[in-house]
Amino acid sequence: PIKAILENVSHHGTTRPMTLYWGGRRPKDLYMDALAQQWAAAHPGFTYVPVISNALPEDHWTGRTGFVHRAVMQDFPDMSGHQVYACGVPIMVDSAKKDFIEQCKLPEAEFYADTFTTAADRAK
Image (tube, rainbow, N blue to C red; front, side, top):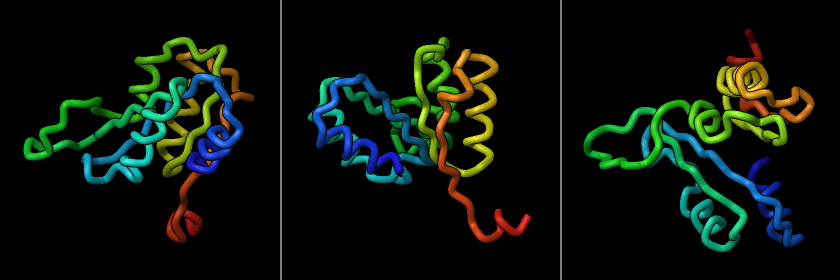
């Protein structure tokens, strides 16, 4: 869903500032990392922030670490004038929504999400 949004924005020449926080356990787990870097290089209003939760010493990771939504909160402590489009596993999306609304003043109506669920998730 995020890829489609960004492609649409790129196609229509939107200049609205956007920041993409992309998470993975290790650097090799960053989905379509090269594409996100290309978007950032091609669009001045677009910022890409990869966040790694479990980097190992052999990864030589020097970027952001921890939970993705916590990195967002560090960079945007007041989200009252923002919109959030979140994708991921249900616990991550739910945690982000709760924290953004309660701690960062994000209006609940400005939080949009797609959760990635498995058959096991749906069976619960």
